[in-house]
Amino acid sequence: MTDFDDPYLDAGIDTLAVRAGQTRSAEGEHSEPIFTTSSYVFESAAAAAARFTGEDPGNVYSRYTNPTVRMFQDRIAALEGGEAAVATASGMAAILSTCMALLEAGDHVVCSRSVFGTTTAMFNRYFKKFGVDITFVTATDLGEWEAALTEKTRILFLETPSNPLCDVIDLKALSAIAKRNDSLLVVDNCFCTPALQKPLELGADIVVHSATKYLDGQGRCVGGVVVGPKKYMDELVVFLRTAGPTMSPFNAWVFLKGLETLRLRMDAHSANALAMAEWLDAQPEIDKVYYAGLKDHPGHELAAQQQRGFGGVLSFQVKGDQAAAWRFIDATKIMSLTANLGDAKSTIVHPATTTHGRLSDEEKAQAGITENLIRVSVGLEDVKDLIKDLQRGIAAL
Ligand SMILES: *Cc1c(COP(=O)(O)O)cnc(C)c1O
Image 1: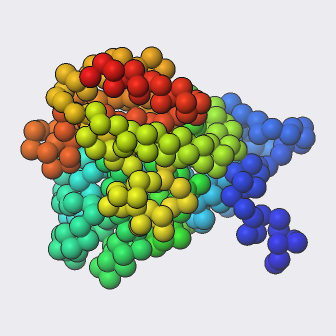
Image 2: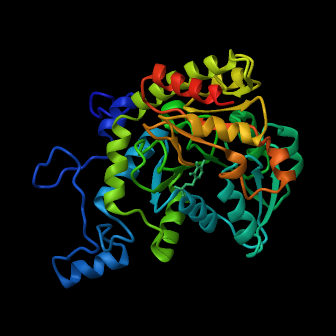
């Protein structure tokens, strides 16, 4: 087969983002339809029986399959370069489903210390309860990952770049470590999306997403997705059929539409974030800026190799204490004060008292979450207006 026969073979990311996965019904609709149906009718009793045995792979019930959800799955699988994808009700459901499908009691997981707080809580509160052992490691320290591995280690789990300090982890090196131990490398690719980073090409086994963030890109719906080899995705499908954390067709449609502009948006988020990071870096009232696009960031070189852009999230420490950080945040007038990220609207948040507020003082210190740290998810507004908003913050210090 050549790219003359199959126009999507070796197609560029923008083509896949707009076109991959779409199937048309007999109505000939141009845009992807939303199939709001919980179940499907069969042409005969024999056809129903064949569906139920799996002999005929067609639709039975929307907890199992739905055409709109399938289009979203096929599109994101094409973008990540994976064999198959499974959509879930949320990003947390994506991580939960991966672990439920692939782990059993007695298994061991090694997880980066700088992952989404609820991910840490899920491993600690629930997986430990069912006999899965967890070790947390400093994400950038490959020696620590290697030392944590046991013969029971089934999964290595991380995000890169990390939230909120933008630590960058060497995916090629970590995948080599995982393979030597017969373990699976699972990467939460929420911050970069396949527009900026393709972990499967760098050796990861499975990618998980909170679609709630950049895949939607406009803060409308909660959802998640897992991408990887068909043999693992088949196991996830069985978990979803049985346990039920499926994506709704309406949300799948919003994410499908979000994907169509993904690369354009991620490049614009990255350009705005770099301009803001460079501006903040030059201000005497700002202590330190964390953004891998800055040349003096420890992860800069690595990010330049394994990412196509540096992404839309940055953080910085103001000179002063928590009260100063709060004054900065309260003085801004454009950026939304919300913990969400990956939105066309810029958001600003104080991690130590919100997203990372449940961590103990010691855990905060380990994760670098200081009281004067502020995180911004840079949106798509005009960057000169966003910089003026930062000036309002600085004037309030
Ligand atoms: C938001 C987020 C999640 C959880 O996703 P939900 O859709 O909110 O369940 C997981 N990982 C990362 C990196 C996130 O930012």
